[in-house]
Length: 562
Image (cartoon, rainbow, N blue to C red; front, top):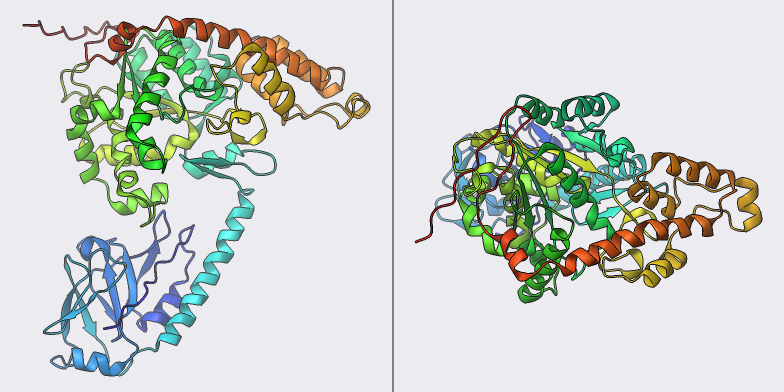
């Protein structure tokens, strides 16, 4: 048997491949087709009739009603099929191994056609003389690919060219369209009604990042307010992937907001440092280097003022074994197709990347932390503050949770902190000029802002004073929206800048005045993070917290040391 290519078709939206085209290729009216979230062709019948010469290989073996399938031409010669199936007559059924395509590896005796290994699927021989020629298959494949490319282009145009996933963020001409992300990811916008309820329940005014729409989207945040109002406990979970020795201003956003949430709700916090994931993703990164970066990043996190009595920080390389049962449960309940659909992995990606999603999902479930929640059978709800590019991990997590009998985690999403170069991207730790790092000096901060911060002002002073600036694309103004807490001052800056009375130099000067003290204070607090302080946050110990508005939750007592 000759080795042939598969018809794995990457569509983007369900229905992108016409059913008639697939029927034409298979020469049968009995194949039903649908596309899943990734767009891979899937079969919805266990038994299907195909023309001789056409092989349908199903990943998962076809004992599931939506096993992923590929179509193959095993040969372009009817004679080959006649020899292979000489013991079979028209209308008979035969079985073949058909798991883990992409390539059928040949055949072994008694009319079996083998793919790599796995379950059997029954196929009927319709007519040994109706073998299609390879050129016919190629023609239909070309037709399908043309349809897909046309639809992909339409979708890209519709979405303004933006791309958002856990590893890259690229905006359209006007930056990131967050309304389209909400629609694409299926989350909900945080509206004024929800903010009013939060203020009523907590007795505190919502954080200015909530009021300004910087944390703008959520999944089940209202349920966390329900738990808090009833005096039922929940906990916070956020994380950091160490990609540099020093964190930058953008990295502070989820942690500063998480600290506010912890202070307001008085709940425990777990912080996952994904040193393993960065090792898998960064080709040249070694384990010793990523471990050292993780330690330095943890010191940066601690310096923000988290309470060690309520906070547990852990590195995956160190804590993985403690939550392995949870990781294994998630892994067993998640298919490779789901992972590929969420993250777009391909056969060229290392298996470490393929296996990582359950690791990031595991802290969403309280049973991963028996030293904090000793009753592992009890579901303690989880709230995850994160940037919206991390949402694919937790869509997968929320999908698998009911199958395991665990509660879906709630999420609250932030917008991206823009790079100095403009609103189309987020900051990058690997590009020094795109970010202001927590180790930068006041002079370096000022120089970076003046030289690299993208301006929405006029090309000349005269043009700016005449037409005004564009605050919506001006990076200094956008950064002030994050770090200038005074609403009235921020609005006055916006008015003056758009009117042209505040020049680009003036808004950049104000930004340097606002963020320099923040970084200087962080540097001061970081110097106080000794080895003993670090070890205390990393220690597996009971945490103390008030689990809700009306009820105090007793933390488990630490076991006596021998």
